[in-house]
Length: 140
Image 1 (spheres, rainbow, N blue to C red):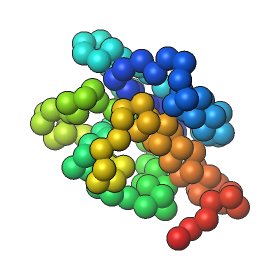
Image 2: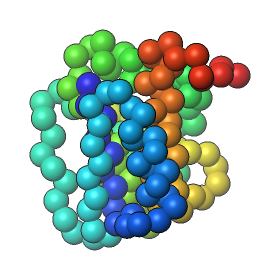
Image 3: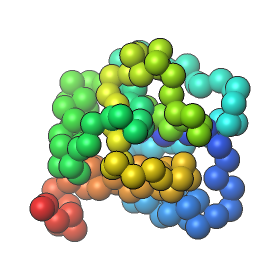
C-alpha cells in the first residue's frame, strides 16, 4: 500500500524538511509527498480503492499502535493508497471532512504545518515499523 502525504505549503530547505526526509527514507512501503500551494493547485487524482485521512484539530487522537493497526487493516484489505492531507492555515472545509475516511489529530495543541508534516511522516515510519515487528518501537 502506498502512503501519500499531500500537504499545502512549500517546505523548502528547512529543519522540518530535513526531518521529513530523514523519516521518509526509513519507510519501507511505497511513499510519496505532494506539495500544493497554500491555495489553489490540484490534488492528484486518487487511484481506485484509496483511503483519505485528514489531519484535523477535531480528529481522533490515536496511539501509535492504533494508527498502525488501521494502516495494517487497510493494507490487508487491499487498499492501494492511503492519502494523508494537511490543509492550509484554515484547515479543511466541512465537505472535505465529510468525505474523509478518517480524521486524525496530533494532539490538542496547535502545531505549525511544516512541523505537523514532519510529525506525520515520523508516525508513518513508526506505524510501518510496528507492523514489521521492528524492535526499535517501544509500546507504552
